[in-house]
Every structure is written in structure tokens, then in C-alpha cells.
Length: 228
Ligand SMILES: [Zn+2]
Image 1: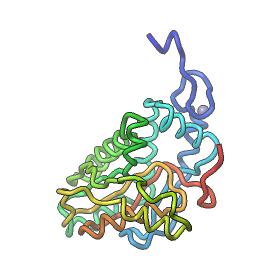
Image 2: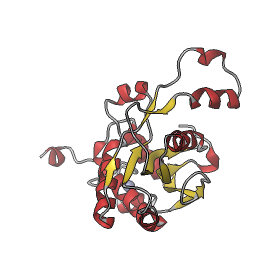
Image 3: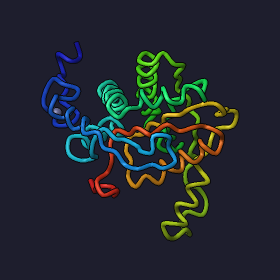
């Protein structure tokens, strides 16, 4: 009924009556890939570039509460997993891992409060269900990582290396999470330089997890954030 009175527009281009129209959906079917030596597959993958309609719809979803995008974005991650060969890679770790965990990249506590939800969680759940269904393996969502955010001496810190070092200490595995004999697929929304993603992977492997790969919705061209 609400839709009859207030028809929504496409989150990417405002075309009426679609959560995400076919043309905008196509911007999530690019299958980008970059090296990630610390992952079992040796690469990480993204559905598309963070620009144009993809960027517009991710902003609507992430920062303006367009939760109806959960579904098309989850579906895009599932298609990416299939095309990138994640299902074959899962088969390869079957002998050494008892469970495969889908781990959402952590949001800072501040941004989580601002948004009122963990926006990656519904995507992680749907991807996990898809992979479980496709492989018959034990696949679960595990909120294994936490990001304490930037505190204290941030103003005094200068330089990229120092900044990276400071942030590194803040991505960590939650106390009580056991990662021995677990394989992990990390999922994230936007990957820029990949530095945060690498810290997440390092945190997981340091606790005994075997990271298969990372799947992201979008990758920023040239590894730089785009101005609004
Ligand atoms: Zn559209």
C-alpha cells in the first residue's frame, strides 16, 4: 500500500518502481579482482566500481537507510562468489576446516550508532545461506571482528604509515571467538586502498583462521575515495 501511494525510485538512478533497475544492477556484475597474498585464493573480489549508479545506490543504502537494497546487494555478492570460484575454493579447504565462517568487516562503534544497524549483517546472512545451500558445508555468519575506532591521540598522529599503524591496533578478533580449524570469507562494502581489509585478514589469520578470500560490493577506482 505504501508503495502505491509513494512509489520508490531506483536507488541508483531514481527511475520509478524499482529498488534497483536492471541498468544499475548491471554495475554490480563487473567482477573485479585484485591480488591478496594472505588469502587462500590469492585474490580478493568486488562486484563493481564504486562510481556512478553503484556509488549512488550504496550511499542510499549505507548512509540513508535504504534497507530494500539488502536484497539486490546480497544477490550481487552471491553471484560474485559463484563466478569468482569461491565455491570451488571452499571444496579445497574441506579437509582442513570444520566450518566456513562468513565474517562481515567491522563498522566502527560511532558509525554503527549513527546508522542504527550493522548494514553488512543481512548481506553476510544471505551469502552464508546461499553458500550452505550450494555446497552442503557447514557455513555460518560470525561477527568475529571489532573495530574500536579512532580514539585519543588521533590529532597528533601524522603520516600514512603512523595512521595505518594506529588503526591496526583497533581491528581485532572479539574475545571468545574461536577461529582454529575455521575457514573465513570476509565481506565488506567498499574497498578503497585495501589497507583495512588486509588488517582484518591479518587479525583473523593471527587467531588461526584460514581466510579463503574477501568479497566486496565495490572498489574505489585508483584506490582513492571519490569526492561527493
Ligand atoms: Zn537505476
